[in-house]
Amino acid sequence: MQHYLIGEVARQTGCTPETIRHYERLGLLPKPLRGSNGYRYYDSEAVRRLGFIRRCRDLGLDLGAIRELVELAAQPEASCAAVDAMAARHVAELRARIRALQALADELEATAHQCRGGSIVSCRILDSLTPELSTR
Amino acid sequence: MQHYLIGEVARQTGCTPETIRHYERLGLLPKPLRGSNGYRYYDSEAVRRLGFIRRCRDLGLDLGAIRELVELAAQPEASCAAVDAMAARHVAELRARIRALQALADELEATAHQCRGGSIVSCRILDSLTPELSTR
DNA sequence: CTAAACCCTGTAATCGTTACAGGGTCAAGT
DNA sequence: ACTTGACCCTGTAACGATTACAGGGTTTAG
Image (cartoon, protein in one colour):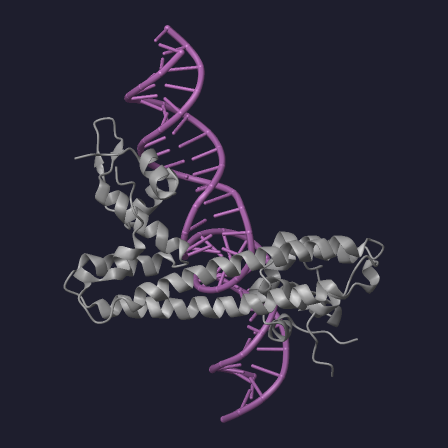
């Protein structure tokens, strides 16, 4: 059975060793075997699990949600519907974030185009970024 | 000349009083006048400036970038091109984030559809979230 | 005259990570 | 053998942007 040092695991998963130790402290990763020198030795299952966590983070899940998933996965008799529901909920959130970012990017781009090479006194960006105040 | 208590400014700009005091500590907002009771009194210029900051935050700019903008705005002779460049840079970042989120949402949605009501042992979501390990 | 709704300061928590200080270990090269 | 460099360890503190809390003072309406 192969084992890996924390640095190798880091390279394989795209996390840093610090993040891996951090996840261990949080209880998201099981405590790995330790050599007589105190080094952590991970098996491929641990690498797989960390890869899962990393990927979930990329998807924008927070560690709380990931913890839910990891715990769900640890009970193989549980219904897949719970996982499915989480996924659906998260997709909805992602779509909402995308819409908001899209609007903001469009807006910023539009205002930037109004301003080319003038001096800042007439710069429209700063003006257009400033919301109207209740003009009363 | 009208002046506003911190709570009124908060309501007008959508920040909390705590955030406003925080910005003052960071030097993003000039120190306001103080009454004999120690209360902060803001004028409409300060409200405007805070509105600008708030709006930039909504746009996804971090406080460092906002600080740059605020300082640029304070030097009216500076070229508008700098502001323009910042805006362009930020739009590019936003677009990249949008693309990534889009891909991830699609992926999560696709995998969720593969899994309806089964038990977790055969759940594809967890599998598909786990990246392929170097199969060697 | 007192209770609610404000305001103040200063400090610490949040989240997910990263950095640092101050050490120990290991493999390769000279 | 010995040093160099790349790794590993622990524990603690920083980051960014806020938010919460403790422990107080002030103002306003009933």
